[in-house]
Length: 434
Ligand code: GCU
Image 1: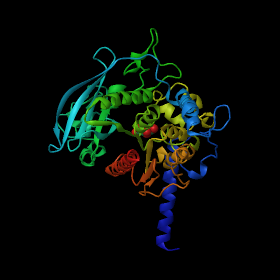
Image 2: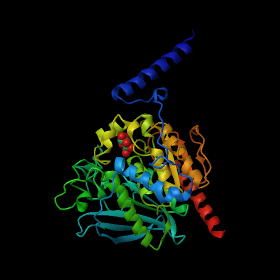
Image 3: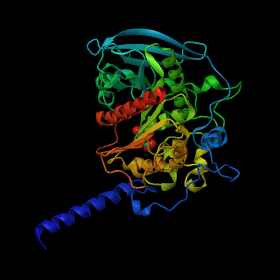
Image 4: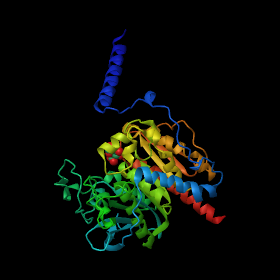
């Protein structure tokens, strides 16, 4: 045997060994496609009484509500019945990107006193009026999305980043611009879109404190101390607040309120999917590397599982979700139903080759298994085989790509979302001429 073959075998052995190491470090986590269990998904177009949905009307008037209810009851939780006041106040505005865009900060105030608020950072191109707009959360504070010195630093709790950009769970000046690669403002604005972002921890800090902080307590009935079993966790609360940001964008004369796309990466992609499913005013829904509890099918148990996510993040979902730890087959829903809830509005799912924890194949498959509902609206069927890396696949209403690289949201991802948005806009212009 030649030295080259020996070296190759050594490398293969090392890779297998490393792969086993990864699996061994995370007991119960499978990252081997051959070990994905066989499963049957719940049928989207079958009513709870077992009869079949044949028409758009039957889907929209009855089955869609059954599916929404089942997803809310078992995974994301319902928004409590109690209503609160939400006010908006523009606190500052200025010009950016060499005068080609305006930027403003809008305080979104939850409840009757001024204590609980989120700051929405809105950047709009000046070249057009009433622009389509992306809306999405950021992970570390608005000031991390740009090096613009005027963007205020959040005073809310932030996750410590093991760098000088945070200390004692507070953000500081050092963090300015540190997530700028995730927010390519210039490209977005030049493409004719606005972009609005907000720090998710302003709405509910991403730490399990038994729901004492953030917006949850504003909704408690007298004597209540935590959400009820089928009420929202943090993802439900974040999604609800995106709808409040949409309320503001609808009032902003610079934004075309009929064309607001909700976007999110990772846990915030889970959130954007639930927001898009919950609020039919969202024009497009974009999930970037959202994984378990987002686009990935639970029943595949590839990468992060229901048990793993509930163990690490007990505050994200409703209290009923942990009942399905290691019992995915008993869930009355799976994530293809989340995609279906978005129809006939557009939905885009993106994965990354290096993001096996999020199960790229499972992310694609949930989109594929929403075929039945999208076909009711004459969308073309997606094929079962996943697209190759860096070869985006689109139907009229659905898009998918598998980017080469790690778990992240990059300029390449944004480029695909903008192109997909342009196609949707062309279509709606065509439709309105008919
Ligand atoms: C963890 C978590 C994922 C989540 C990700 C993120 O990896 O397990 O479910 O998507 O964090 O939000 O960055």
